[in-house]
Length: 580
Image (cartoon, rainbow, N blue to C red; front, side, top):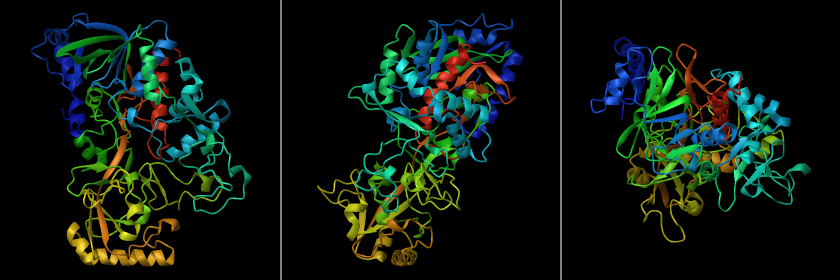
């Protein structure tokens, strides 16, 4: 693996000029740097060009568009070219074996958020509310995103989606959390507003319902028996356009080829079946490689994460970052992510189980010092739609967790958690605290299965998990007192999440931070072009999806999949000359 750290970026920034001074107009850049590969005459020829053109490069293949990465972003780009273009051909590369892609999209919840013409202006307002004071994503980028969101459903229909394949939860309608004679709000209080009664349509999915325009987002979920996820649908669409799309798996991208004088990207280098190939891209290269979830060095450098368990695929190792840096790309949102929250680990660290297998409202979480350190509420998406849609909420005092963004001081930064924590609970709440996935409680004991340790006293439990016994005892005493008062005096956890830890034996489960995805990458403009450090777009180079995501502050669930779909469409329209 190449050096993809911040140091690598800085080193790569100086490579292009050096090659230009010694080799002329064309250079192969990327994971292999700019040094020629002695085993490849084609690389030698490309670096020997001195005429100001690239005629000496021996291209193995020629396409109109090359798309790197076949997750939802790459797949959508290929399909969009097939249905919007005029017969232009593309190469779709995937480094892994899975034709659905080997990053995050096949593992996601599958909700593609969208809006409609009626709610488009409100959605733009909501996007700006989520951005808040993080002004690195310009208005025009958000505006074009929302514009394409308003035609998302029409695009899927053009791509072949039938009504039986998907369910639409429309913008502007009430989201019913539970069906009952009288619905309840997030704190369990009965609502007397008839629009929340049983039979309301499950609809909009606002992660931050405190914002007035939040109900402007709807969601589209593929739910058919065959095309059961958006990734499976898009793969079927690829297969329907094999005359346009050449789809190769086990074909990892390694380099970009750039004209040194014009800075235009000419094509890519990739490996396949033990050989190196050079594919020419006459109209553009679209980078859809995802984030750096599986690159340990980059997680440490940009997110200060010494440990972080990635919940999705293993393909997102940051392969596209250094090639783009070497091509002159600027970068943004490198510290933005969906995470973290705590998942369970077996006591010996040999197996992980996701956050939702722990009922955290039935215990507390402590660090290796025996103290609580956060609200220990782990959600992926806000659970308080109902409460806020009734006008009862306040963004500054909410007690939820939203894709790892915790309420800290009334604001919502993402929280990087400690390497190791312990979930503490008592025997009175064993079944609620340990849910399916960690231990099949109907079949056995989480202690016997290696997920938990138990002890008759807190002092003994502290010894088993190596935390200070006096600190753990004080922490539990303070917590139990808060439960009696009905107020978490330390971190203000919600009143209905105050469960005392009193009844022996006591239990502890090891926890480590987990997350879904990173959002950082090359700067993207309103045409989905990758922008250079000089502020100008790099000719013929585009991006989509989380590789340079627009999300920079608060995140709306389904937003990454939506930008996979819509920025790929924007990139294709840019390449086809349909955007001014």
